[in-house]
Image (cartoon, rainbow, N blue to C red):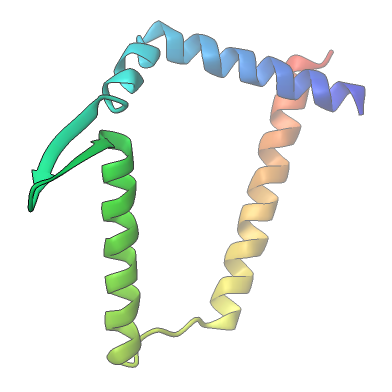
Length: 104
């Protein structure tokens, strides 16, 4: 259990250092900038990140409703099962690889 915690901690540190190398923290603060606009005399303040999330949520909702009306909203159980198994194996492989690197 302690080895897994070390591997997760070290992988998190490597991720943070690589993101910091590309000035990721400065770039991410740009999407926190507030936007102010007025609609029908009412003032609204929203951040860019909230706007992006809201638009994606709206788009996905419209897409799901459209597919439902067109009778194309289906999930094939065998396809979903094979994807779940594939991603579980991929996660296990990556975890084993990271443990091999960081734990000696």
